[in-house]
Image (cartoon, rainbow, N blue to C red; front, top):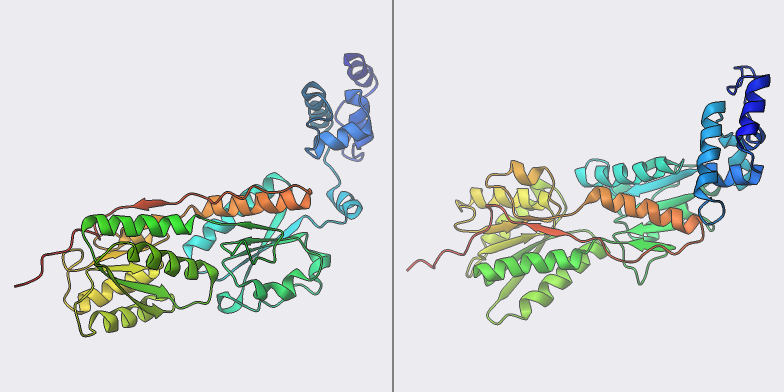
Length: 354
């Protein structure tokens, strides 16, 4: 192999002149391998087909020659644009920014680009941002959306990975979920252990699988403990709407709840304002929990007890699942773990006034 390098160096520089673009054939000759081997190595598909030593030799030859693959020609041969569409309910939340960051990181490592697109009102139907989705995209990752919102984007051929979606009823080739059920269980267990028995659930007023799961799991867990009482009120995910809904529910006749469980941190922020408007102290008069662990959770006073969801890992796993589908592999189905973060917004309930 060294003789090949030396013979080329003897006749001309190993770095091609600016006017002559090195080809995969040049790399193959320099490394003493076939063009097929070069394609496998530079396409990162060499494992199990060529040795690690051969792969390293090819990479060194490509670097010495200044070789860069002609991605446009390669994509035409593969019938791929190396572009993925990530559809999210909104661009204004920190969580979905994290999902994009994670997906884009994995995509870049594999030579893909990610186009970010918000679905109107969060659940669709999302209009197709391209004249022909099948011509412009290799696949779609859709986060926290109703499945029927994706009809226009997906077309008949595009691989689809659903995030935060019902794995039993998904239209996608794969589904990636956070372990939301366990997050709700952790919240319920925390509040029950503190001694709370009267609960108010401030639920997101959005027809989505993920929020249905939260309500079902909370009801299931609390009804297993004798003496508990659960009420539910709904609000769109905004601070003002949450304030109005929580204030109305907390002012209703009957014993006031001692713990308010919110479907996400934005709803919790509205609940804080409602509690203070009613003269209630957090957590002495009312414990409040969220779910997401946004930066907002630490900005609230007292800081919010909530469930940490790793948005970037969520995006990474979604992109990895789509890459697996594109390569004909089956992605893993294990849910991503979540963690309860206990802060100062929860405490044992105060004894009733006599």
